Amino acid sequence: MRILATLAAAPLMLLAMSAAFSAPVSDDERVGIDLRRTTLIVESIDNSLRFYRDALGMKVIYDNMIRTPRTAATDEEAELSRRLVFLRANDDYIGIVGLLEYTRPRRPVREPEPQPFSSGSMVLLFNTANVDDAYSAAIDVPGAESIQPPADVTYPSYDGGSAIQVRTSTLRDPDGFLVELNQLLSEIDNTGR
Image (cartoon, rainbow, N blue to C red; front, side, top):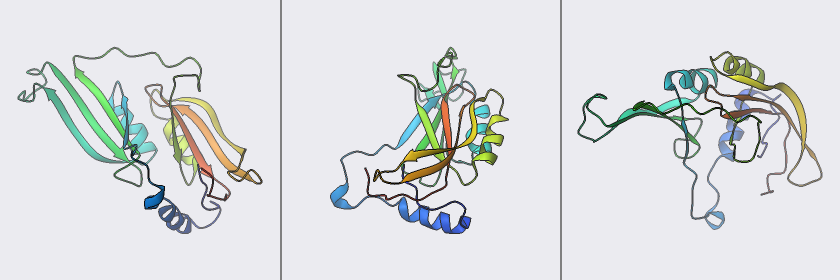
């Protein structure tokens, strides 16, 4: 994670600096793969949209029913029917969150991991300009669960000589996926990898 600006500065300045930072790496630094999307299997896309779209502010860029066989016009005619939604933050090519709900047949609901940050679990990390507001909106979504309310923490920086100040919170989304919300409070040297 690279911190670009002190969030105490004007939000428009942060937005401009973030846009510059999120540019693709130079040609000589590129690798042969992009992580385009993480798709979450969810019980209710409508409830997940309340969390990711309404509370966190992501934008829906795709929302369709996928049926098998492809000639099926309705869920009843399909052997398998799924609703697939893609949401983006500030890039429509990488970092997409997909939501997939099986409507026919219904898939069993998996119990959430008993311990956060356990081996085999996944954490979706979002940077936000106001972690307290994002956390309050997200925790109000039915099924969301607080792991750690917003608190200030200090991490070692990439250069090892300074510190990174972050206001952070952790919660589970309505389907039990871990979500970390971070508000970046300090700058670091972004030459670290």
